Amino acid sequence: MYQIIEKRLLADKIFLMKVYAPRVSANALPGQFIIAKLHEEGERIPLTICDYDRENGTIDIVYQTVGASTYKMAELNVGDSFTDFVGPLGNPSEFVKKTPEELKNIRFLFVAGGVGTAPVYPQAKWMKEHGISVDVIIGARNKDLIFYEDEMKKVANVYVCTDDGSYGFHGNTCDMINELYARGNHYDHCVAIGPCIMMKFVCLLTKKLELPTTVSMNPIMVDGTGMCGACRLHVGDSIKFACVDGPEFDGHLVDFDESMKRQRIYKTEEGRALLALQEGATHHGGCGQCS
Image 1 (cartoon, rainbow, N blue to C red):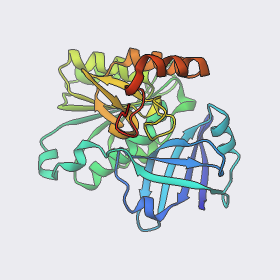
Image 2 (image 1 turned 30 degrees about the vertical axis):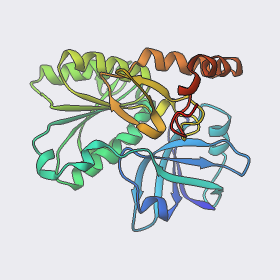
Image 3 (image 1 turned 90 degrees about the horizontal axis):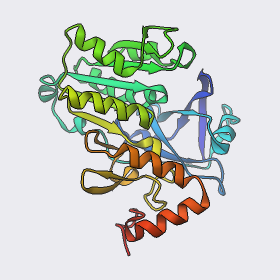
Image 4 (image 1 turned 180 degrees about the horizontal axis):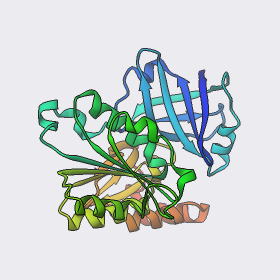
Protein backbone atom coordinates (compact mmCIF):
# COMPACT_ATOMS: atom_id res chain seq x y z
CA MET A 1 0.00 0.00 0.00
CA TYR A 2 1.20 3.50 -0.86
CA GLN A 3 0.20 6.03 1.78
CA ILE A 4 -0.78 9.63 1.07
CA ILE A 5 1.51 11.86 3.14
CA GLU A 6 0.12 15.23 2.01
CA LYS A 7 -2.86 16.53 0.04
CA ARG A 8 -3.43 20.07 -1.20
CA LEU A 9 -5.93 21.87 -3.40
CA LEU A 10 -3.77 23.88 -5.82
CA ALA A 11 -6.50 25.46 -7.94
CA ASP A 12 -10.07 24.80 -9.00
CA LYS A 13 -10.40 20.98 -9.22
CA ILE A 14 -6.59 20.58 -9.30
CA PHE A 15 -5.03 18.59 -6.44
CA LEU A 16 -1.52 17.68 -5.34
CA MET A 17 -0.80 14.48 -3.43
CA LYS A 18 2.51 13.45 -1.91
CA VAL A 19 2.68 9.65 -1.85
CA TYR A 20 5.15 7.42 -0.04
CA ALA A 21 6.66 5.25 -2.78
CA PRO A 22 10.41 4.86 -2.07
CA ARG A 23 11.21 2.49 -4.94
CA VAL A 24 9.56 4.84 -7.43
CA SER A 25 11.23 7.98 -6.08
CA ALA A 26 14.63 6.26 -6.06
CA ASN A 27 14.52 5.86 -9.83
CA ALA A 28 12.31 8.71 -11.09
CA LEU A 29 13.55 11.22 -13.65
CA PRO A 30 11.92 14.24 -15.33
CA GLY A 31 9.43 13.30 -18.04
CA GLN A 32 8.28 10.02 -16.53
CA PHE A 33 4.91 9.00 -15.09
CA ILE A 34 3.28 6.53 -12.70
CA ILE A 35 0.12 4.42 -12.81
CA ALA A 36 -2.08 4.51 -9.71
CA LYS A 37 -5.00 2.29 -8.71
CA LEU A 38 -7.38 3.20 -5.92
CA HIS A 39 -8.24 -0.43 -5.17
CA GLU A 40 -7.85 -3.91 -6.67
CA GLU A 41 -10.73 -3.47 -9.11
CA GLY A 42 -9.98 0.18 -9.79
CA GLU A 43 -9.12 1.83 -13.07
CA ARG A 44 -5.46 2.27 -14.01
CA ILE A 45 -4.76 6.02 -13.84
CA PRO A 46 -1.58 7.33 -15.53
CA LEU A 47 -0.28 10.47 -13.80
CA THR A 48 2.80 12.54 -14.55
CA ILE A 49 5.40 12.81 -11.80
CA CYS A 50 5.43 16.40 -10.55
CA ASP A 51 8.32 15.98 -8.11
CA TYR A 52 10.27 13.31 -6.29
CA ASP A 53 12.21 13.22 -3.03
CA ARG A 54 14.70 10.36 -2.96
CA GLU A 55 15.69 10.99 0.66
CA ASN A 56 12.13 10.85 2.03
CA GLY A 57 10.91 8.30 -0.52
CA THR A 58 8.00 10.37 -1.82
CA ILE A 59 6.45 11.18 -5.20
CA ASP A 60 4.29 14.24 -5.88
CA ILE A 61 1.42 13.82 -8.33
CA VAL A 62 -0.93 16.53 -9.59
CA TYR A 63 -4.29 15.75 -11.15
CA GLN A 64 -7.48 17.47 -12.23
CA THR A 65 -10.87 15.96 -11.46
CA VAL A 66 -12.34 15.22 -14.88
CA GLY A 67 -13.83 11.73 -14.60
CA ALA A 68 -15.16 9.20 -12.10
CA SER A 69 -11.75 7.84 -11.08
CA THR A 70 -10.16 11.24 -10.43
CA TYR A 71 -13.23 12.36 -8.48
CA LYS A 72 -12.89 9.24 -6.32
CA MET A 73 -9.19 9.98 -5.94
CA ALA A 74 -10.06 13.46 -4.70
CA GLU A 75 -12.05 11.84 -1.87
CA LEU A 76 -8.88 10.25 -0.48
CA ASN A 77 -7.15 12.05 2.38
CA VAL A 78 -3.86 12.02 4.27
CA GLY A 79 -3.41 8.55 5.77
CA ASP A 80 -5.32 6.79 3.00
CA SER A 81 -3.41 4.64 0.53
CA PHE A 82 -3.32 3.59 -3.11
CA THR A 83 -3.43 -0.14 -3.75
CA ASP A 84 -0.99 0.20 -6.66
CA PHE A 85 1.48 2.93 -7.49
CA VAL A 86 3.67 1.69 -10.33
CA GLY A 87 6.62 3.50 -11.85
CA PRO A 88 8.58 5.26 -12.97
CA LEU A 89 7.21 4.52 -16.44
CA GLY A 90 7.92 5.99 -19.85
CA ASN A 91 11.18 7.42 -21.06
CA PRO A 92 12.85 10.33 -19.24
CA SER A 93 13.37 13.64 -20.99
CA GLU A 94 16.14 13.58 -23.59
CA PHE A 95 18.06 16.40 -21.94
CA VAL A 96 18.91 14.26 -18.89
CA LYS A 97 21.31 12.34 -21.15
CA LYS A 98 23.33 15.48 -21.85
CA THR A 99 26.15 16.82 -19.71
CA PRO A 100 25.79 20.19 -17.94
CA GLU A 101 28.44 21.58 -20.28
CA GLU A 102 26.36 20.58 -23.31
CA LEU A 103 23.20 22.02 -21.79
CA LYS A 104 24.82 25.36 -21.03
CA ASN A 105 25.08 25.94 -24.78
CA ILE A 106 21.31 25.44 -25.27
CA ARG A 107 18.81 28.17 -24.38
CA PHE A 108 15.65 26.38 -23.22
CA LEU A 109 12.10 27.68 -23.16
CA PHE A 110 9.50 25.61 -21.32
CA VAL A 111 5.82 26.24 -22.04
CA ALA A 112 3.34 24.93 -19.45
CA GLY A 113 -0.36 25.06 -20.22
CA GLY A 114 -2.90 24.34 -17.49
CA VAL A 115 -2.10 21.12 -15.62
CA GLY A 116 1.01 20.89 -17.82
CA THR A 117 2.66 23.05 -15.17
CA ALA A 118 3.05 19.89 -13.06
CA PRO A 119 5.31 17.92 -15.46
CA VAL A 120 7.25 21.04 -16.44
CA TYR A 121 8.26 21.69 -12.81
CA PRO A 122 10.56 18.64 -12.33
CA GLN A 123 12.23 19.43 -15.66
CA ALA A 124 12.96 23.03 -14.70
CA LYS A 125 14.05 21.89 -11.22
CA TRP A 126 16.43 19.33 -12.72
CA MET A 127 17.93 22.08 -14.89
CA LYS A 128 18.40 24.35 -11.86
CA GLU A 129 20.10 21.55 -9.91
CA HIS A 130 22.54 21.13 -12.79
CA GLY A 131 23.35 24.83 -13.04
CA ILE A 132 21.20 25.58 -16.10
CA SER A 133 19.03 28.72 -16.26
CA VAL A 134 15.77 28.30 -18.19
CA ASP A 135 12.69 30.37 -19.00
CA VAL A 136 9.22 29.02 -18.22
CA ILE A 137 5.85 30.24 -19.46
CA ILE A 138 2.89 29.30 -17.27
CA GLY A 139 -0.41 29.78 -19.06
CA ALA A 140 -4.03 29.27 -18.04
CA ARG A 141 -7.51 30.52 -18.91
CA ASN A 142 -7.66 32.72 -15.81
CA LYS A 143 -5.92 33.57 -12.54
CA ASP A 144 -7.79 30.94 -10.52
CA LEU A 145 -6.20 28.15 -12.59
CA ILE A 146 -2.60 29.28 -12.07
CA PHE A 147 -0.68 27.09 -9.64
CA TYR A 148 2.92 26.29 -8.66
CA GLU A 149 4.04 29.79 -9.59
CA ASP A 150 6.10 30.33 -6.43
CA GLU A 151 7.71 26.88 -6.67
CA MET A 152 8.56 27.45 -10.33
CA LYS A 153 10.11 30.87 -9.61
CA LYS A 154 12.65 29.17 -7.33
CA VAL A 155 14.02 27.13 -10.25
CA ALA A 156 13.42 29.25 -13.37
CA ASN A 157 12.67 32.64 -14.90
CA VAL A 158 8.86 32.61 -14.98
CA TYR A 159 6.42 34.42 -17.27
CA VAL A 160 2.74 34.04 -16.40
CA CYS A 161 -0.06 34.64 -18.88
CA THR A 162 -3.84 34.28 -18.77
CA ASP A 163 -6.28 34.16 -21.65
CA ASP A 164 -8.61 36.67 -19.99
CA GLY A 165 -5.88 38.98 -18.68
CA SER A 166 -6.90 38.45 -15.06
CA TYR A 167 -3.27 37.84 -14.07
CA GLY A 168 0.11 38.37 -15.67
CA PHE A 169 0.42 38.91 -19.41
CA HIS A 170 -2.90 39.17 -21.27
CA GLY A 171 -2.84 36.43 -23.87
CA ASN A 172 -2.29 32.72 -24.43
CA THR A 173 1.02 30.86 -24.43
CA CYS A 174 1.62 31.57 -28.12
CA ASP A 175 1.07 35.29 -27.51
CA MET A 176 3.59 35.09 -24.67
CA ILE A 177 6.18 33.38 -26.90
CA ASN A 178 5.74 36.12 -29.50
CA GLU A 179 6.09 38.75 -26.77
CA LEU A 180 9.34 37.22 -25.50
CA TYR A 181 10.77 37.19 -29.02
CA ALA A 182 9.66 40.80 -29.47
CA ARG A 183 11.63 41.65 -26.32
CA GLY A 184 14.74 40.18 -27.91
CA ASN A 185 14.66 36.72 -26.32
CA HIS A 186 15.72 33.84 -28.54
CA TYR A 187 15.86 30.13 -27.80
CA ASP A 188 17.49 26.96 -29.08
CA HIS A 189 14.91 24.45 -27.85
CA CYS A 190 11.32 24.56 -26.60
CA VAL A 191 9.54 22.03 -24.40
CA ALA A 192 5.74 22.40 -24.43
CA ILE A 193 3.42 20.44 -22.14
CA GLY A 194 -0.31 20.94 -21.76
CA PRO A 195 -3.58 20.19 -23.53
CA CYS A 196 -3.15 18.79 -27.05
CA ILE A 197 -4.75 21.83 -28.66
CA MET A 198 -2.32 24.13 -26.87
CA MET A 199 0.71 22.02 -27.88
CA LYS A 200 -0.53 21.98 -31.48
CA PHE A 201 -0.62 25.76 -31.76
CA VAL A 202 2.67 26.19 -29.91
CA CYS A 203 4.26 23.82 -32.42
CA LEU A 204 2.75 25.68 -35.38
CA LEU A 205 4.33 28.85 -34.03
CA THR A 206 7.72 27.36 -33.13
CA LYS A 207 7.95 25.75 -36.56
CA LYS A 208 7.68 29.23 -38.09
CA LEU A 209 10.30 30.42 -35.63
CA GLU A 210 12.51 27.44 -36.60
CA LEU A 211 12.62 26.52 -32.93
CA PRO A 212 12.92 22.74 -32.29
CA THR A 213 10.15 21.68 -29.94
CA THR A 214 9.54 18.68 -27.72
CA VAL A 215 6.02 17.85 -26.54
CA SER A 216 4.72 15.40 -23.97
CA MET A 217 1.75 13.36 -25.16
CA ASN A 218 0.75 12.24 -21.65
CA PRO A 219 -2.75 13.79 -21.98
CA ILE A 220 -3.78 11.01 -24.39
CA MET A 221 -2.76 8.03 -22.24
CA VAL A 222 -5.40 5.74 -20.74
CA ASP A 223 -3.95 2.49 -19.35
CA GLY A 224 -0.26 3.37 -19.60
CA THR A 225 0.91 0.06 -21.13
CA GLY A 226 0.23 0.48 -24.86
CA MET A 227 -2.27 -2.40 -24.77
CA CYS A 228 -5.40 -0.25 -24.97
CA GLY A 229 -4.30 1.62 -28.09
CA ALA A 230 -5.63 4.95 -26.81
CA CYS A 231 -2.30 6.74 -27.07
CA ARG A 232 -1.48 5.55 -30.60
CA LEU A 233 -0.24 8.45 -32.70
CA HIS A 234 1.68 9.27 -35.85
CA VAL A 235 5.06 10.89 -35.40
CA GLY A 236 6.24 11.62 -38.91
CA ASP A 237 5.81 8.38 -40.85
CA SER A 238 5.99 6.18 -37.76
CA ILE A 239 3.28 4.82 -35.47
CA LYS A 240 4.13 5.42 -31.82
CA PHE A 241 2.48 4.86 -28.45
CA ALA A 242 2.87 7.68 -25.95
CA CYS A 243 3.12 5.45 -22.89
CA VAL A 244 5.80 3.05 -24.13
CA ASP A 245 7.63 5.05 -26.83
CA GLY A 246 7.30 8.44 -25.15
CA PRO A 247 5.70 10.33 -23.64
CA GLU A 248 7.94 12.96 -25.27
CA PHE A 249 8.24 13.39 -29.05
CA ASP A 250 9.33 15.89 -31.68
CA GLY A 251 6.35 18.24 -31.69
CA HIS A 252 6.88 19.25 -35.31
CA LEU A 253 6.31 15.63 -36.37
CA VAL A 254 3.26 14.82 -34.20
CA ASP A 255 -0.10 14.63 -35.97
CA PHE A 256 -2.13 16.44 -33.31
CA ASP A 257 -5.35 16.50 -35.34
CA GLU A 258 -5.32 12.72 -35.66
CA SER A 259 -4.55 12.27 -31.96
CA MET A 260 -7.36 14.57 -30.84
CA LYS A 261 -9.81 12.91 -33.22
CA ARG A 262 -8.86 9.46 -31.89
CA GLN A 263 -9.42 10.63 -28.33
CA ARG A 264 -12.97 11.69 -29.17
CA ILE A 265 -13.71 8.39 -30.94
CA TYR A 266 -12.09 6.34 -28.17
CA LYS A 267 -14.57 7.59 -25.55
CA THR A 268 -17.31 5.23 -26.74
CA GLU A 269 -17.30 1.42 -26.86
CA GLU A 270 -18.40 1.56 -30.50
CA GLY A 271 -15.59 3.97 -31.29
CA ARG A 272 -12.98 1.73 -29.66
CA ALA A 273 -14.20 -1.24 -31.67
CA LEU A 274 -14.04 0.79 -34.88
CA LEU A 275 -10.47 1.92 -34.19
CA ALA A 276 -9.39 -1.65 -33.43
CA LEU A 277 -10.91 -2.81 -36.74
CA GLN A 278 -9.37 0.00 -38.79
CA GLU A 279 -5.91 -0.21 -37.24
CA GLY A 280 -5.55 -3.96 -37.05
CA ALA A 281 -2.19 -5.21 -35.73
CA THR A 282 -0.99 -1.66 -35.08
CA HIS A 283 -3.89 -0.82 -32.76
CA HIS A 284 -1.81 -1.44 -29.62
CA GLY A 285 1.87 -1.47 -28.81
CA GLY A 286 2.31 -3.01 -25.39
CA CYS A 287 3.45 -6.34 -26.79
CA GLY A 288 5.34 -5.01 -29.79
CA GLN A 289 2.34 -4.54 -32.12
CA CYS A 290 1.77 -8.26 -32.39
CA SER A 291 -0.67 -9.68 -34.91
